[in-house]
Length: 484
Image (cartoon, rainbow, N blue to C red; front, side, top):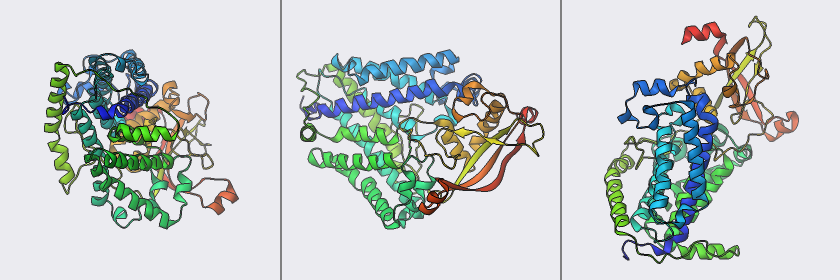
């Protein structure tokens, strides 16, 4: 079936299936480490309260019928184990239905998590991972050639991802149009990485070149995916290089890594042979010889027809002057709209949470809680956490921007600190009270900026900050009880 089989993309299939599965490993590890204190039975936004007010049809999830912290732990461990088997390539060695089943399990389990995750799972890369996991499930196994319809859907996904991000920038902040966006972005992005300060200190003409390169990569290069062969392989290679630049400059969870993996779907076997030959390796995937089973052809064509029908919404969105960023048009998170940083923040505001053991807050000695990813300590080098996603830290960034949706969990968060709740404290890098319960807590606002080279040499600091007052005044358990 020449029209159905893409025999020249066997290495691409292997890379995409294993790569998407690897991202699922990271995602389910985050479920095991963060879900309970954020969304568990006694979490900041408990799942049972959410499912009581949101019907199943609006957010289908296994947890609608029954939720316990043990159940979500079971979901997390099953997800990790199944994803690891796919990373190792074990299901891919069987018939086509085996990787279909394995990826189907991952998709159902993670959909169940995302649909009850509320603001902690309200990120575009959650929908991206769900859509990617759904599509690669139909790429088949080593017994058959990759199906052309699924590859085309993957290319369409990458095109939407890049083009959506490029258009939202042009339609949004004028800083992207006048090429000044990166005068600010490396400093004000949600979670800087260890090299972000160095990127910020690059000369301004370099920042302007970065913006130009971004526009070309997101607005022009993606159309090369529509020309299979050397053109598509080259376009994908440009995207990979651009995404690696973003990996070095900041922490964006698995967005960049998953984009790299998906872009690899457009690189044909000839290009892989040339690339692997440069580093002295042989092709990793063999050439399948079996004909696709009839059931498999029917299922793939049916999935293609459904995705084609669902594409009408994101296509309209791409063409709209009122383009939505990171929108899902169905509760299954299939064929979504994507975009990133349509607006660039000009100044960095941080919420710094403090506590004290003293009885009188007016004369108390206040100590700061240290978060894992977001800056608090002025001397600490930002860490590289991506592709891991620190959900509490991202929530704190949005809170500092004045997002009212984040206040729903922030008051309970202060309450957990007053209780010295162990699972909550483990989300932080440092508890200044070593497990003791503070008498009072409060939150201050500071403006942060990177130090200049001269300031760094003089003070040893990586950040300078300026106090901008209180977000919440001194709060004890009684006040938390009244606020709920």
